[in-house]
Length: 78
Image (tube, rainbow, N blue to C red; front, side, top):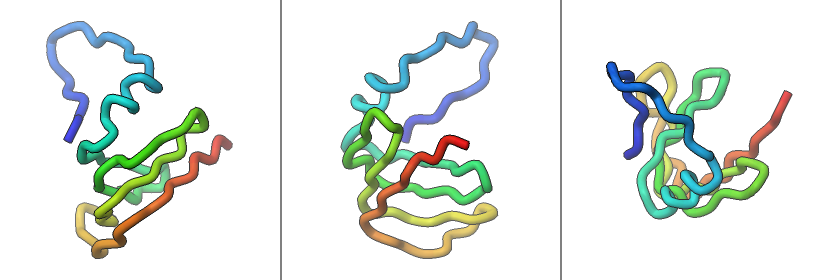
């Protein structure tokens, strides 16, 4: 799973589109702005920052709410 870590090194900005394409097939953690998290394998992403995950687990307040399987997370920019 890819995770950004705070270190003493200078943080380098990353272009999100190629970075996300490189993560396809890997386990990722998607944290929504209201606190829910979804951990699963990234199947696809698009130019609108929507995500499709497989073998997905829903996590709330650090506790698993169970396995959901295939999930589509739609980006809502508001």
